[in-house]
Length: 256
Ligand code: GLP
Image (cartoon, rainbow, N blue to C red):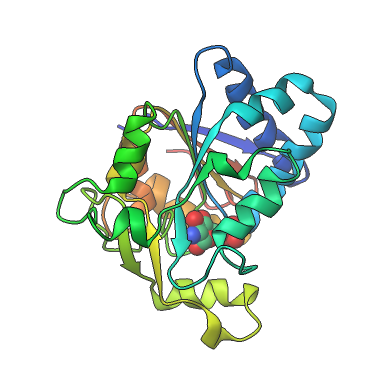
């Protein structure tokens, strides 16, 4: 029996309500210690971060709290440096940190130095995972979902014992993400990605999905049995996981 919470909102309200969900968690946490947030990228998160920035412009409590958060990116392409416009380092700086006037020193990403010397394969924790632990662990893990059910860059077939490591991207991910590159041949074939075990260790997980093209992946994630063929489905076993979606993404979910 799954314990996940489902929040389904009108498409036109999705960005505002999703960003309010994040903002309220950050404000509630603010007095405890610097909060650690695992951050996701992609078109869905771009809209949500945009709404979060809008709210921070008129909400001092949020603006101040955002400055004290430690941000741990879920993933990064191999071979793109941080100034490449399609790198996730650039994405996080330009879509969230700089508009919110947050120091870029608060952002960590998985990379050659913190992953390759101790890759999180075969059940071994990586240096990047250890960095999160040393900060007190991830309090809120944000996630998106790929049309093939991937989460971060954990492609179908990923073991739930995986930690942060270097991964090969699937053909469907390369083709889905080629829309961001001028030529499909420029899309990196490899990435550094946190693992499923990394995500399962977070205190709270929220996965965001909008649009009809995510409906089948969400149907598989939520209605199917948790399995490695759909890495996102394993998140339904997390004790505090919310799936936040719009009606279109939820269009293939039926009541039991
Ligand atoms: C990339 C990211 C994922 C993200 C996915 C969906 O593949 N690595 O973390 O969930 O894109 O992105 P979009 O919101 O653009 O559909």
